[in-house]
Length: 344
Image 1 (cartoon, rainbow, N blue to C red):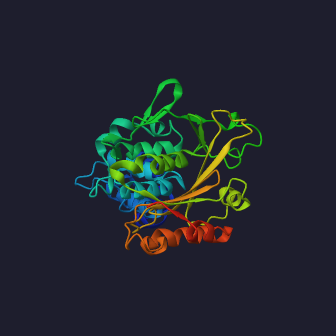
Image 2: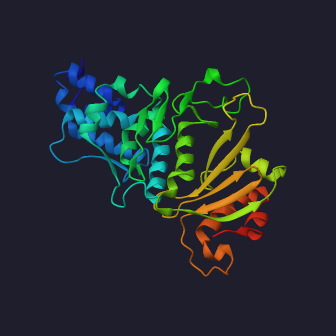
Image 3: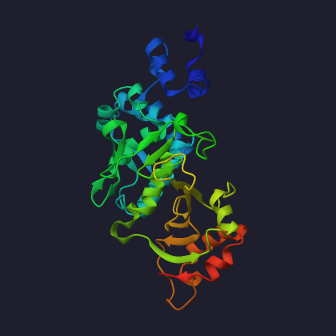
């Protein structure tokens, strides 16, 4: 029956509605339409996925002709996976570039034919890990910290490690106690992570925190410029720590908690970073707030544009302006920005 459908209708209507692996099944099963499923068609699908996930300029394929069909098939398949996972990794890549974990001329990160063939011989091989981890594995070996690759690797006892970091483990939903704050909204594609005495609500949050806390220090990129003591019992800090109302226009909330390895700890301490800038297209300054145990700190890669005697807002206008927009709804703007203890 498919033989009777005009090729143009296949090109315009049918093939675009199929997933990549479904289109390949057409190529294998329908001799009359096999010629329609080409490497060029898959490159179009790749470009569509890159645009949809806001990855254009961040991730790409090697476009040197001729393009092997098996190569573009693997690339098209992995780029088609997921919904929020790829855009989240795109934000990580933008920040990693600002923090110099990727060379200045290192973008886009190219998914090479050799790497994909060696590590993804089948669809099943890709899905051995939770999706966010599987996606990071595709490019993590191209990100470096102090010359060491930050590739995702297996460790002992079912754990994993990024580069030469301390191993971490995936916490299944069933291991979280009833009522645990990370049980609600648990995503198997981006699962809860245990790293030593710290717990992260997702692998994406774990990556971003390692970037902000440790990896950004490479080559002295990023500095603490402001620290304000608000107090652990101040309800405004509590609201900022726990609110779900931080919009994408304001920043990205990255949550984690210190529970000393005990999921039932009654005295677990919650911490939140709010990434203010550096993850949107065309931003060149990475800045974030750290809200922890009654303190609020501002870190930034922004260079001071005025002498040290002037107010912080005059010296770091991008970072301070973004911080004000987050702090203002919680009544913290004046106490943090205008009565700050300037550090840098």
